[in-house]
Image (cartoon, rainbow, N blue to C red; front, side, top):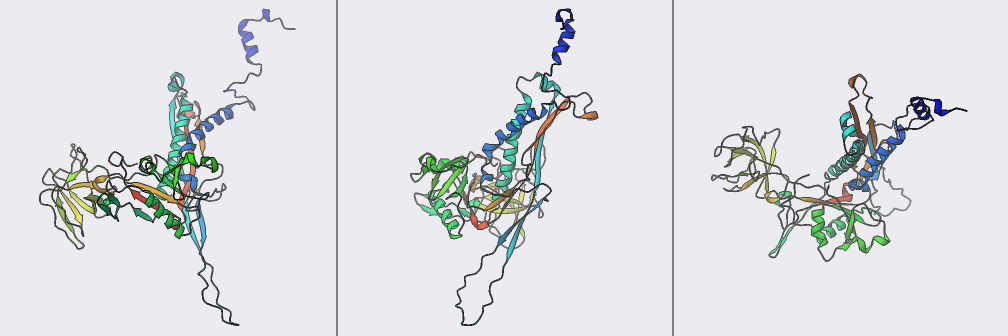
Length: 440
């Protein structure tokens, strides 16, 4: 029997330290806990990712097996025409031919990472790797969500909200015409639902779904026709972000819903230019006309603020009309000119010039996307939808000879594609908050 009183203390520490004690850095073959630590960080990544995937949740899922190629193909069978011609006795008709269409998309890879120094890891008050994993979870979520949202924004069916005031209603046919009175209303939602029904769009769990921004939520929820989710959530499965319904359309809200607005034109207060006293007459034809502006089209450094050419035109919004600018004379105040492509409407002195993309006077425009089932598809590679990659200190080899850097990041394969244009419609409208919102 061992007499531990005769053993030096340093040897005792070695004896007890080797009693199969497991640590997070044990490296003996078959005895590492590194996978357990990695699992924790993967959970952190996915936990942070889930709440933001609002746009992706209604797509037709299409997982691709590994080594299944990166070009996606959906097939769509055309419907037969109605057989309205009566059969003739004893005569066989020609019959209908099959026709199938293909819709293609390329699977793409996305990812990001952060480098962490050994000093930061040793001295930070917070658990750096855990925090970084959570931040990358949010980053992954927002990236995939935005990829899906941007695809949905290419939908071809668009409705523009009319301006409804005490004096009547004004219809709009362009985004640039939308003013502060052109808001999302229950009537527009009913029209969108009717459009989808006309196209025989299948429903999602018994309803159509609309994705809106919280600022549009503010506009709708004050309407007496609004039905809050609390009144029916006990009887149905609730979508992520669902807030209520109108006319058979259920609404989900997200701050990542698109906001459309033009950017800066000259870098000065207000980020605008002003048509000078000469103005411009209405012109037609295939050429261009020059319009003088009061402000210089230069920054304080002398660099041009607005650059445009025939091959790279810039869309301008002037008094609710969009113009294609194909050139700009970079000059001082009173000498700067915009070259605008014909045809165009008359421009009067004092009108403000904004970059195109927003509503009238550059108000922020909020697209409300109304969907039926199978309107779009989204794909991931099986087992690779979210892959956390951690490179510990010391893993860099000769590129990191002093073990000073560790990295944590994510990688994913993803694609989204509209499959049925007729199963979706976009309502573009302003909001009571349009004057304070910025493009995203």
